Image 1 (cartoon, helix red, strand yellow):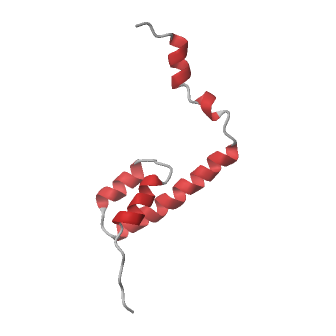
Image 2: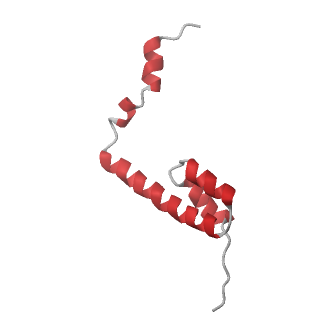
Image 3: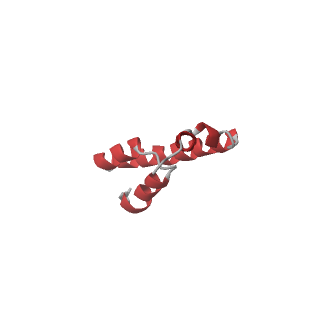
Length: 81
């Protein structure tokens, strides 16, 4: 099967995809990701979950992995004052 070189280059080149995205969308995604990631990293460190901390730190999922951790795997602290 013959694959055209230009088709592979256009698939690999992500610059052409990002040229059509407005810059404010990229900034909004950056703020979204950093907000969720920061909260999830703080909670995973507080709850002594090193594997979650490493996964959340390394994997960028536009906030999906941090939201899953916060919603389902983060412990609820029951402190009575």
